[in-house]
Amino acid sequence: MAKNEDEPVMSMTPELFASVVSDAVKAALGSVVPATPVTAEMIATAVKAAHEGQAQLHADAMKKALKPENDPAPMISAFNPAGDRDHPRPTLKCEFTLFDGIPIDGTTDTVEELTLMNRLVAGDYWVTKSDGAMMLFKVREIRNDLGALRRIDLSFPYRDDADRAGVMPMVVWLRDVVRQIETRAKVA
Image (cartoon, rainbow, N blue to C red; front, top):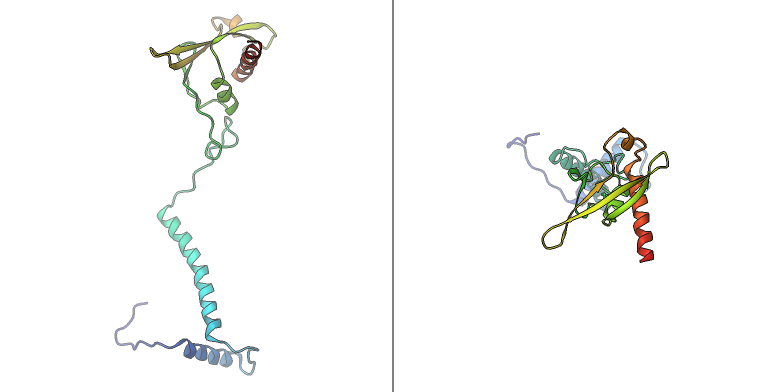
C-alpha cells in the first residue's frame, strides 16, 4: 500500500504499544480480562516468533524463485540401484574394449561388473557357457611405449552360432576370471 505524503507518521514506544494492544484486547473481550497483563516483552516475543516463521517461508520462496528447477535426481538405474548421485559407480582403471575395438565405457555396466573389470589381469582363462561347456576368455593388456597400461581388451570365440550358443552374462564370466586370478595368485 502506497503511503500518502499527507498522512502523519505515527511512532510509539513499546510500552505505549503494549498499552494500546492491552486496551484493544480488553475492548474486544468485554468484561473478560486476561489472567496476566500483556507486556511489551510478550508482544516482542510474539512478533519475533511470527517474524522467524515468516522468514523461513520467505527464504524457501526466494530459493525456489531463484532456482526453479528440481533438486538433482538420484540417478537410479538397473546398473546402479543405489543411484549414481549418492553412490557413484567406480570408474574403469583404463580404457576397455571388447573384441579389440568395441568400447566398454562403463555407462551400461553394474557396480559389480566395473569392480571386477578393474581387477582383471592379462591372461587366458576358461569360462563356463550355459550348457556347461568350457570356453577360452582372453584378457589382453595394451601398453604404451613407456609400459603404462593404456587399454584392456576382452575377447572370446564369437564367430558363428555354435560360439554364440550358451553365452552367459558378462558378470558371470568376470566372476569366473577373477576367481581364477585369485587362485593363480595364491599358488604363485
